[in-house]
Length: 223
Image (cartoon, rainbow, N blue to C red; front, side):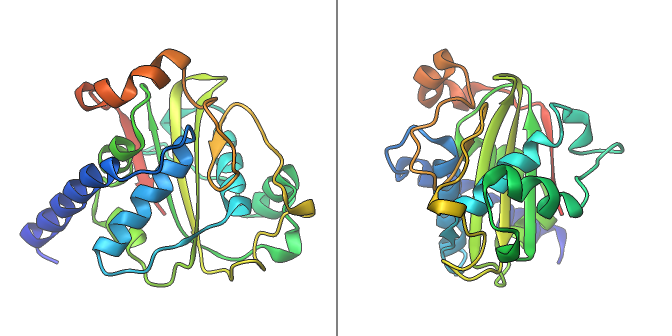
């Protein structure tokens, strides 16, 4: 793909994400809002909307916690990612997800930043940083999505994570008792949880008005 078409497609995604912010569901859970932005951009790109799986989303929060607040491990020369074995041995048990129902992770988007921003800004300015990120977002093999947002011990830095899977609704990432284990700090999508523990209360009240003026300093990568 040449440079110009890629820039145009990236610009289109950014434009869509801004307009999608107006259409977001009224909710106090930024992870739910992030899933809305993801699905809005997928449908605008002629891809199907994805099922928001709370079990997968809870695992996305555990994925964030594995970084232990280390923003430097998210992107750049020192980038790391948790071992694949952690999904079955640590993440699933911590969420109450039945390990026998784990499905393949078909894509991951992870970003870290020093200030809290709105979900649409996190999507366009932190998670959608390159052509690889766009390919992950629009992959036709995805069927499910789960998102999580968390500060570190309730404060900076802030992590944003989106996990994709090709699992089947109602039979993948199944929760024991039908309810995910809530873990703080942090919020995950699909939990029917009015969550505000991912960000400071003063930011929660003000971010719709000031997020566009924030300077994003962070890293993002797609695997």
